[in-house]
Length: 441
Image 1 (tube, rainbow, N blue to C red):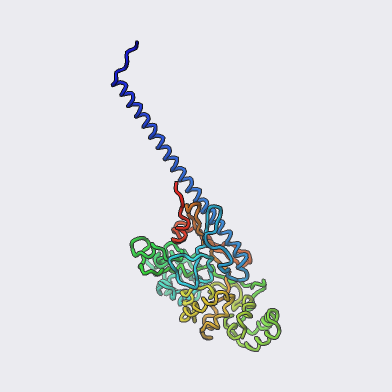
Image 2: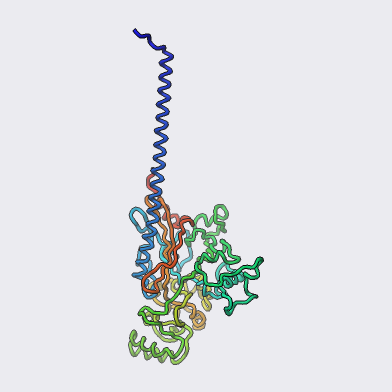
């Protein structure tokens, strides 16, 4: 018989076995946790890819919507298309937009953005720029100097802001190519450019109304103080040809009366054409708005012909669409500054009738105001922004991109694209709660 191992030796073996088992269990738990982390990371990467693809899908959908409803200078209505929580597989996308009729709230407005609802940096006058909130005469001069070309009428050593700097600098001497180019303008700061709207969604988010607790710095007064970027563009342009494909009729001179009379006869009949010709006589007009005021045409009649009229030869950049411009932008237009609030209030009651700007005649403004504002306003738009934000499955993943489309040739084409994902969450608390994951890994 073999001798039995001492009890102490058997106890040592048991302890060693237990430690080995514990080590194996620890290794198993470690690798299980690593695999769980890898699974979560892979799921998040997949959700991010879904969000990015949803943004691409939203951009293509915007092009389709504009091709269907933004024809001949028309502005698509919000009920013409889906603008919020549009499903793309397990992902969703939103069009981050602006409501031109009401002030910003704590939740974003969803829809396409009309670029003609803003001031054009390349055509706005000094007075129009100075009327923007937060603008100073010095900053307005810096903007004008930036785009001022050598040898132009307003060039000169005494007005060259950049040549007087120490050390002297050269201004661009050409048109702005994006709104973000304002960051290169002397005197421009991020506070002036973006205001409290750090994520550029047109809504007052919680971080934008808490004073200095979190970035960005704000006054905590419950109102969104937007920056200059909210009200300006470089894309607004009206083509030389109207919806019919023919060149627009220049309304400024009596020499165009024969063409105008043919248009009136085609659209309204001989009797109405003769009545309009008697009403306008041989007077000269400086804008289509003046003609509208004096012609005696009803809003329905004017809507049938206004797309074929112009007050300048060729393409016109910078006309502001009074049907979609905010009160802030309308206040920058000569003749409308004192009437901006009245115009917006009246326009809000006629949302379904904004097919031209003939309603201005009934809004309470004067003929003198129309004469001053006429050269700067329109009732048509040909450039639109699709600011698409998307989330992936279970609310994970986030992407955002802004694309500007030009519809002046009939087919929407992208003329500008900017990735805004780094600007942060732009969909408000409502969308965050609606997309919050219902389960966790």
